[in-house]
Length: 132
Image (cartoon, rainbow, N blue to C red; front, side):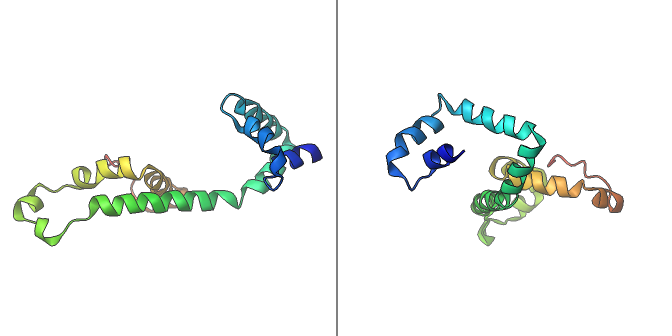
């Protein structure tokens, strides 16, 4: 493990060649296999779980921020665009649904999961709208 730690340490420039090979498309399956085998052992799973716990939030937060930015730009409507014809033809599914599916799939999945939680299901009727 000491050798592996030295090789993957980005502060040691002389090992960049090895890191390039380790993460290359043609050989990355071996790193994935080591991760899978580590995960398959309960002891390894515990170590990886402890390592992973603080990291997903930052990843999800970044993804949601990007998706919200896309949605904001896509759904921005000025008052000049709101006409009687616009209002009479407006629907949640056509105006928001398709945009959300394309621009914010992670946000949609999180909201959908939260809406289907045990507590949520006890307190509300299950949503069967096309936005799911």
